[in-house]
Image: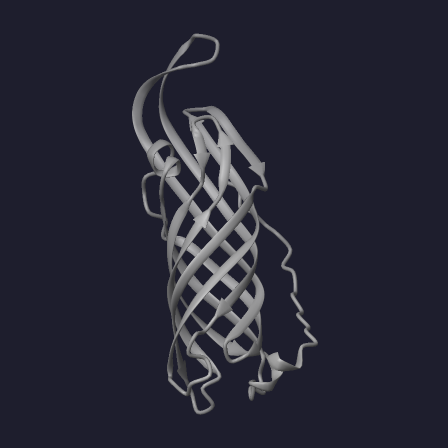
Length: 211
């Protein structure tokens, strides 16, 4: 099964509104985040293609914190879905029938511009809830095999993501944090019986300042 390989992009943000910087006392505004993701297919994706939860996922992000309540950055993820079905008889396009084991695979690599809002960011609380939303493209590697028949297809549909979670600061300066949360991923996709590649993900990661 082929791996999706993509060059990473560096996101730099700038803004001139003084009100956004007036509240900020952070010396480390540019932060890197990396983590592990578990994803569950939903809708047509689950019903018609892969029903199993994927434990093969992760993500990385570079975020610029304009102030204690708002950050914007670039997020790159990876998730691999796989399911093999027992031998059955299938009808082909040429009216022939094939008895075969079917293997379905999907590899997703979303590249998103993503904003994060911390409603309690102005407080000194160690535990900070957050909400996040992003949009971008998804590099999709779709594969289906009926025994020796079938193949792969590559496409780049648009994708939208929304989520929520909590960030728990640690260390003397409290500029690093553990993060845990959940996302809903909307990926319209039309191929064969599929109408989407939507999923719900649960992630855990760590964020730390870039100097």
